[in-house]
Image (cartoon, rainbow, N blue to C red; front, side, top):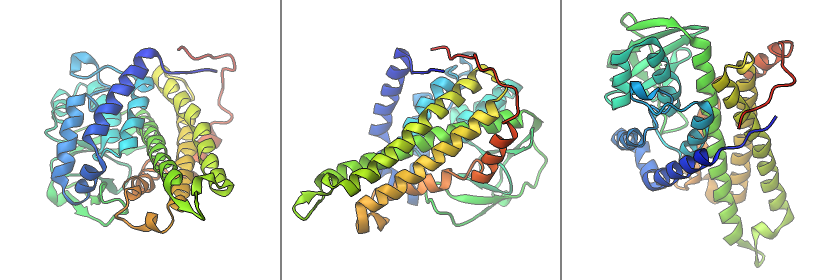
Length: 334
C-alpha cells in the first residue's frame, strides 16, 4: 500500500505552515501560558486561516477537506504548538454538528463566538465558560453549553492546555449517535499534532547539536549523540505511514478504521516520547529549565499523548481488531 501527498496538498501544507510560523511564535506561545486572551488572539487567526472549518462542507461554511488533507495541517499546527482545542473543535465537534444539522451551534464554533472541547470522562482541557462541550460515551454523544459553575479548574502539566473537572448542571443541548467515529477523528488529529510536536523538538535538538561545543567539537559530531538523534528519527519514520494510513481509512470509511487509528496513535505517542527524551538529553541542564523553548512543545506532547486514550486502551483496540476481516488486496488512491 502506498500514499504520498499530492501537489495541491503539499502547496496547501506549505502555505499553512508559513502562516502559522509567523503567527504562532515561541514568544506568543509563551504569552498564552499566562494569558488566555493571547490564546483567543491566536484562535482568531486560526479561524481566518480556515483551520476550524477544514472538515466541514463548503455549503456549511467550511473548507470541505477530508482527513487525508487535514492530517497534514494538524501536523503543522502541532509543529508550532498552536494553543486552543483545534482537534476537539475542527476534527470532532464541527463535523459532527454539520452532519447532525445543528446549524446554530456550528456557527458558534466556526465564527469563534465559542469553541468546542471534548469530554471523554469527568475531565476536559481548554474549556472556557462559553465553550460547547461534547461528551462522548461509547457511540453516544451529548452536547452541553458550559457555564462557569460547571467547570472546576485543576492544575495541569501544560499551562497552555489547562484542565478542569466538568459537571453539567443542565440538560444537553443535543444528543445523538456517532461517538465512535468522533473519537476516531479526535485520536487521529491528536496523532498528527504529536508528529508535528516531535518534529519541532527534533529540529530544536539538531540545531543545538550543531553549535554546542564540548571538548572543542560540536556535540553533534559525537556518535553517541548521533545515535540518539537517529533513533528518534527512525521512530518518527515508522509512525508517519501509520498516521497517513489511518487518515486514508477515515476518509474512505474503511471497516477497520478504529484499529488503524489506534495503531497510528500508539506509534505517534511513542515517537514523540522518544523525540522529547532525546531532545531533553541533547540540551542537557538548560533543557530542564522552563524558560527554554523546548518546554513549549515537550509539555504539550506530554498532555496530548494521553488525551485520547492511553497506551493500554489503544493496544486493546488493536488486539480486538486482529481477527476482523481485512482486504489484503486494497490499495490507496493517490
